[in-house]
Structures are given as structure tokens and as C-alpha cells.
Amino acid sequence: MLGALRRQLLLYGRQCGDRGAQVTPLWKGHRLKRRPCSQREISTSPRRNTVMPAWVIDQYGPNDVLRFNKNLMLPIIKYPNEVVIKVHAASLNPLDINMRSGYGAMSLNMSRDPLRLHTKGSEFPLVLGRDVSGVIMECGLSVKYFKPGDEVWAALPPWRQGTLSEFVLASGNEVSLKPKSLSHTEAAALPFVTLTAWSALVNTCGLHKDNCSGKRVLILGAAGGVGTVAIQLLKAWGAHVTAVCSQDSSALVRSLGAEQIIDYKSENVEEQLKQLDLFDVILDNVGGSTENWAPKFLKPWSGAKYVTLVTPLLLNTDRLGIADGMLQTGITMVTKAMKHLCDGKHYRWSFFSPSGLSLDEITQLVDEGKIRPVIDEVFTFADVPKAFEKLERGHARGKTVISVIQGHKYSG
Picture 1: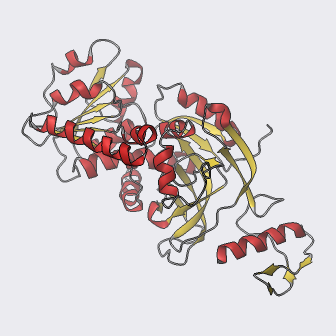
Picture 2: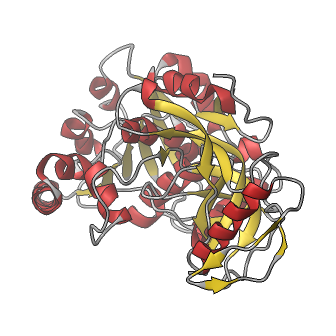
Picture 3: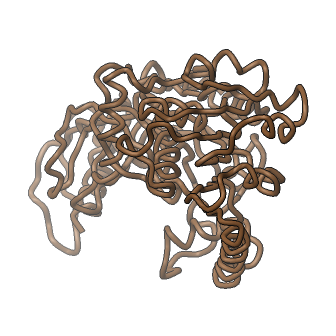
């Protein structure tokens, strides 16, 4: 109710311009006290105080569905644990490419509207982008750990509006204070991929600083965003890391701490792995046919785990609907888990999990110099479509970052 009132008052204020004109708005039949209009303080848009610039999509499809919107409504706090963040920098992930194309739309729309109160397509205009580094501008009543002016970073769940905008709304539980050793551009490269790696290694595999020393870990797809973070996290905890990547990326992954490099282009990966000792953990960022042969390189009957980040959950729900898709996914998971369990190995899926508490621990590791961002390229806010094109070509070495605060003007 208060949010609706504030939005209506701001809309009246927008009509007043910069001259401080007097208005007498009505709300539910009650005449409000006459007072001068004022602009909302958190907006940086000079001529508008209820809208902001953002990159949106109005339908799912290829890269040309991206549209620069100068008049997207400012996010308004609806729940007491929410915060409004002024975005200084964001970054792209393969998930953004998939979401732009409609991947996972069925499940994500269910999360946005569990009671199905809205019509089909109500998620549009949809803002993409999961990573944010910026400054808190406004806090809900129950937010105790942050205040306006705090520099923070976060990775937002995919059912929320994204970060390719001037401001973004986040839950206080998803936010953490930004590492002091990083700029906003550097910080924006880390949250989503780091939390994804953390979910796989810590939440799914049970690894942590006290039990990781000496563990042998194989990372498939080691030069991407998740892989580069996973290498650093494991090395900080004393693990032995073997990385599978191209020869072009070998210098990068070695500099991050990988002891052994497997070049998947030079010869058959399986033949190269047969020459090495078996592993305690395999982290698969590639998926596809790799899960048919990779688990055989785990130590049997030792609690060794194969964890993949490529799962059929969203694909099944898109194809079969929520109920049948969830059922099919459950059957697939149980079947594969039991098959590998009979061989004395554990088969697991892992998913990104937003967590401010996990980011607090990651912040400490970053400020201690144990994790650093790996950035492939930085784009301006006006060049977001080019950033998507670059990411879609694949074979990135690190993250694609969007610098928002340096200027959001768009001439197109």
C-alpha cells in the first residue's frame, strides 16, 4: 500500500517539473495535504524521477530482442528485508544467454508468480544480468546489517529482475559488503560464478578449509568463470587440482594454481587421464557426453563425488510442464545416482544458490588475496548487445563485465 502511494505521488511529482508547482492528488478518495513537489533523491536520471535506463527484452529470442529502455520504472521496496542498489557494474553469465532465449521460462515464471495470478508474458519487460556491485541507496525496515552508502555486491536469483539497469532490488539475505581490495568492475565478475562453485564444492561435496588438504580434484571446463574461481578456492584450501582446458588457456589456469593441465584439443582426454591417479572430486562445468566417462576416474568406495552443473531440470519443465518435468527430472536423478552408487561412487547435481553469508566468507578470501577476479573483457553499458554477442561466441577466459556507472547514455 505504501509502495503504491509513493509511486503515485512520484508520478504527480514528475508532472510538476523543476518549478516546484503545487498539486493536490487524491488517494482512495482522501485529499492529501498540498505541498511542493520534489525529486526522488536516489535517482541519477536528470529529467525523470520515477524511471531509469535499463536493457530489457520484451520477448524471448536471439540477440536482437535486447532493447534499451530509458523509461523502466524504478524498483520499489515491497518487503522489509529488501534493499535498492545503485548498479556500478554488472557481468554476464551463460545463464543470461539461455534466459534471453527462453530457457527455464516455465519454472522461473512459477517462482515469480506461484499462484498464477498474472497473464502469460507478464514477466516482460525482463531485465537480464545476475551479478551486481554497487552502492545501497535505500533499505527496508528490517534490514539491520546495511545502510545507505554501503558498497555491496550480490548475485541475484534468476526469477528476480536483473542487474543490467541503473538500480536493482535485492533481498538483504543475498547481499554482502564488497571486498575492499576490489573496484566495482572487478567485484562484479565474481558473485554468480563464485557462489556456483561454492554451492558445488561446499554444499554438495562437503569440502571446506579443514578437510580439503591433499584432496585430488579434477575440473572440466577450467578456464570459464566457475572453473577459474573453483581452482583458486580449492588451492586456498590445499587441494591438488587438475584442470581440463585448451592449450590457449593453460597459462591462465596454471597461474591460478592448477598443478596439472589436460589439453582437450591435443589428444583424447580419457587417454590422458588414464595416466594420472584417481580423483576424490570431479567438478563438471561442461556436461553432455563427459558424464558418460568422467565418473570412472573417481576413487571407488571412498566417498568420491562427481558433481555436474549441467542438469536437465529447466529443460524438462520447459518441455513437459512443471509437474511432469519435475517427475522426469527426479527419475533421471535417482536412476543415475543409483547406477554410480553401485560402483562405489557418488553422482550429484549442483545449482547456483544466492547467499549473502557465503559471500561474506568469499569476501574474506578475496581481501586475503586468495581469490582474484578473472576478467576477459569489459564493455560499456551502451554496448550490452556486443557483450552478449561476445559471450555467445564461447571460449571465454574469465568473465564479461559491464561498466554501468561510467555512463548509461545510449545513442541508438
